[in-house]
Image (cartoon, rainbow, N blue to C red; front, top):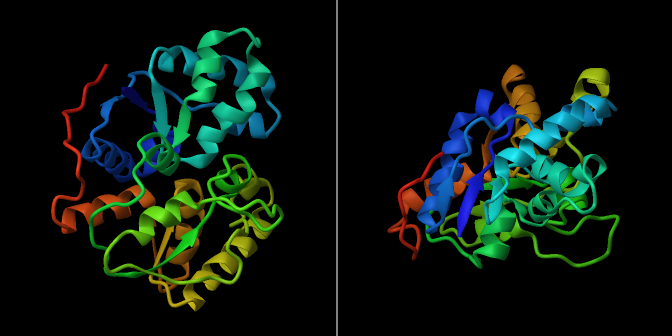
Length: 264
C-alpha cells in the first residue's frame, strides 16, 4: 500500500516538526509514504467563509494531486473532514477519482488504528498529560464519543496514548468542549474565541496536566498562543510528536520494519 502524506498549509508553514513526526511515525509502522509535490491548501478557510467559487478550483487541484494513491493520511481532523464531508459540493457524483479519495482519506490516528490495525505503540512518555479532542475529529470523523451523541465509540487517540509506558492521562472536566479556534471564527469573533480558549486551557491545567495533546495543530496553535502570551504552566504537543518521542525513548518503538520514503 502506497500512502500519500497530506500536510495542511498551516502545519507546513508554522509547525514543520509535526509533518516530520507524522512521516517518521508512518515509516516506523512500515508504511510506504510519498509526498505529492505541489500540494496546496484543501480550501477549508474559503469554504468556511462561504466563498464557494474560490473553493472549487482548490478542491479540484487537491484531487488532481492526490489521485492514484491507495490512501491519503493527514495529521489534522479538520482537513481530513473537509475532503470527506464537504468536497462533494464541488464534484459530480460519478467522479471516481474524488469518490476514491473521499473514502480513503484518513486522519492520522484513524489510519493507524483502523487501517493498519495498530492498537498499541511500544514506547515511553513519562509526563502527566491531558487530551484535547477537536470538534471536527469528534463530530465529523467520529474519532471518539461526544456528549451530545450517546453512541459509544473508541477513542483512537486515547487508545494509542494509553498504550505508552509511564504516561499519566489526567481527566479534564469537559472532555469534548470546543477550544474556540474555529478557523476564521477566531478572527471574526476574537473576544469570544479567546475566552473559550482560556477556559479550555484552565481546565487542562487544573487537572494537573503538564502537556496538552491533540490531533489538530489548529486547536493547539490557538491554545498554545494563549499559553505563551500569558505564561501559563503548560505545553502543547501533536499526537504524532508524542508517539515518535515515545518510540525513540523506548526499545525499538515498533514491531514493523521501516522503509525509506519515496517522493514525487
